[in-house]
Length: 157
Length: 380
Image 1 (cartoon, helix red, strand yellow):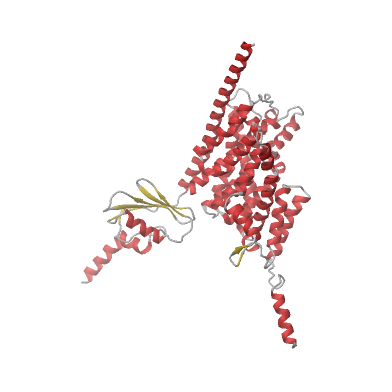
Image 2: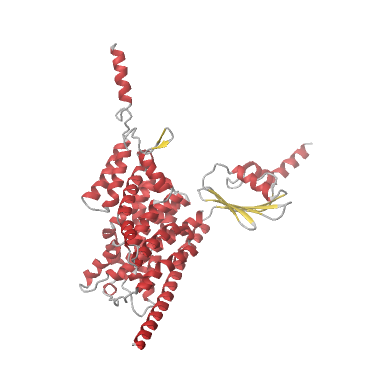
């Protein structure tokens, strides 16, 4: 009996769903029935035998009332993002399969912050570069047409 | 009537006064309010805004004043201004309408490559964002603080109201204070970032810009911004509408109203509402103080970003650009352009840079709006 209890205890201890169900991952809520596919300090991927809607409603309830949480509905996933200062950055919930849903929880990381900042700084250049091209093109078209009109006027005289 | 009853009456009356409800921290806020009123009157630093802001700070920091709360379900006076003007994001957009009606985009149209300087000068916005996150601000707060370096008051207010309304007062105050101090902040950086030869670079006279080009500019710009950063189209759309009204020449009365009376009216509401958000309970914490200190670095890095962009552009250009106009890439129209002019004249008394600097200066307005749009898109 003792051996059996010990075995059950060890199995529970090394079963991620047991651990995660009790504590969550990086303070992000985790559905207890989930099975971990991949786990590191910065990322947890789970699969669960629930539909996307059921998982989503769990997270909507679990994150209800929290500030700086954003739900983004994309074509193939629901992306939950934390813009506050929580240890986790995002929870991605897969769509499409009614019987099984994949959940990925990612740690808040500086790679994302710096990456998105660089991208957006470049984005400002892109916006103004496009404007530059638009202005240059429209300027040339207008100057050209003005010259043409003036030429026609001069020829008419 | 007994003595006790009289004392009770007196006590009851006293409880309705501010004296009974006095808190010592509000004295600090009186000082802050009076400081900005002083800067506006005595130093003439952005007086149109700092004066009503200073008074707003002063007047809301008295106990029991019915200004920024709700009474019997009705908003009180300054709360009404704040709610409809700022929470609804109306005032910054109306100010942009007026600014558009005042602005001549000719220098930018004549030399469109200076648009890139306006983009380069947003460097500080993104670097400050990182620094602000490091000290514990949320991402949204960091974005709203970062945009201060763009030196564009309405854009700062618009973005802050959108992402972190709790920082509206400190952010707006930091933006307008540092904008007023552009002539003090920028020259040492300009000197540090350039050598004598660069400061003496002469630029070709700008080509004349036709009326047709000026008419087309607001439409092209509004279209491109709407396609690429739609989230800032309330600001940029109004900016371009004001400019189209001006350049069309057919709606003189509307143009005059937009750049005159309307602008003045909303400026009063803006200033006093921003000031009114700064109650001692909210303002006296480390965050506003940090915003003020970081705002200065933000401005400095934006100035460096503009100058560096010109220097990089010069590596590829045949007709070199004087890097002194790079600092004008922070918005602060037209003060930053004037700083470039003054600094240029210091090194060559016949080198007038004002019109050349207006290009990056106006590009800075578009650039900071684009940066704000990037942040809004990031969080919405």
